[in-house]
Image (cartoon, rainbow, N blue to C red; front, side, top):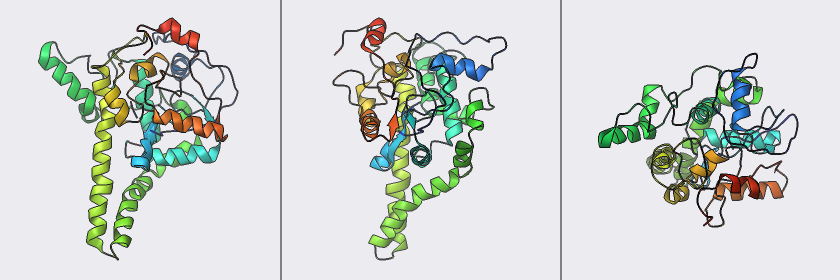
Length: 317
């Protein structure tokens, strides 16, 4: 699920990208479930902790260029291992992701990993297609569930460590999660402080700035991000083969800085780039590419031309 910077990261070993068609997630004897999940999401042997920009690409898509700076997210997002980053970059992107108020990092990532592992199948946390009935009302119930209802049915959390054992063992991520309410307070405190000081010490203007620059901003961007789960699994084009109903929707892509190229993301989940065609708007990718050029991140993963050609369903636009 969309979304801005949720993560950056580091890896223990470097291997070339080998994107393959996702395989059904079946239990593997003698192998921890999390390893099996990660192998299916991003088959890059040996990499333990790397973050990418995914739903999850930028978790806060620049906080409206300061809050719109999130997750793909993380979304950077510790989900798919799309690039590597040094510790200061990892921490910075993690804090920015938390400031978008889409939940602590480990919760967000485990939700997103479960979504990819079971996408549009029973067990998917926010599929609009499973268990909602047929016809118009079934589709309406599915849309509402995928957009926001799922957070009320399971509190928006994947409980346990099945999809996040590696995250719980990362002391930096655990530390960031424990301070989650601090990052939220800072996210709301910044617009209050701006209004307070520019208003000559007026608490009323500070509160007004908090409402419009904090709460209203978060409300709008949350629903833009939620649209990746709902709209992008129901409306749009499927340009590549994937094992679900994920679709590319250019309107959502504009709202969430590239996260709306959701079929691309599900076809190539390890890719740090979602807008794979020339005219597919993807600000998150531009940010990652810029960070790569100034050597803040490296080992950035994108699918090759041959890999894209093997999965392509529609001619490239």
